[in-house]
Length: 264
Image 1 (cartoon, helix red, strand yellow):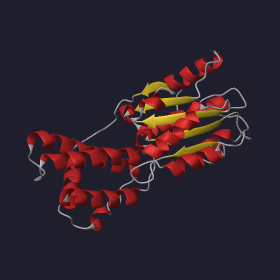
Image 2 (tube, one colour):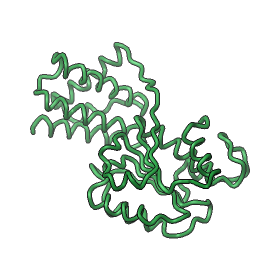
Image 3 (tube, one colour):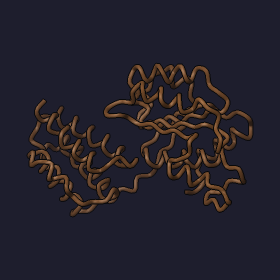
């Protein structure tokens, strides 16, 4: 990955001895943002002169890329929310000084999904920061994060250009799949045999179709409020696809939740 603006920003802060204890990152692409955070963690902890494509005789980059560095902890929603027990477990893992790196680091994906108890627990953690701990809260909607947490973070925006490509065949696939789900044709409709990128493209096309239908009303024969709920469901699903949640579980969950919306 090319050295990015956030990496440059963090390194400049480090040089000026003004490195924040926790960053709040608002982004439109959870997966890309997470990858950039990993590059920052490599840079901050590198025992050599860090370069983008590390060729040094060390295994730090390997451990980070494989999410096996003991001093790096990542959490994301367990179901609909991030729960208090997840934050307590995070704090427990960061209680010891790092062995293989300079810093203990934690990453909270979809930080806007912290439930009330989890938010209060992480807030207490932020109020008494330790020198060797760095945090990265990643969100697609910082307005849903409580003000007391935002006030204790260094906020940074990482917005990426969309690389979405569409054509008639992809649109038709999305339309057929959505129609089968809406017609409740059973979980068998999820056996698409698409890879992650193809699945991502499928749901990007679906999101486009639903947004268009909210205006034109020529596709889904349901009330507008249910269209909006399904649209929000697809947007959440896109984020989860991007950071490697199991595809079969996601598709089955999507089918079930669409049914709940239709029957609600």
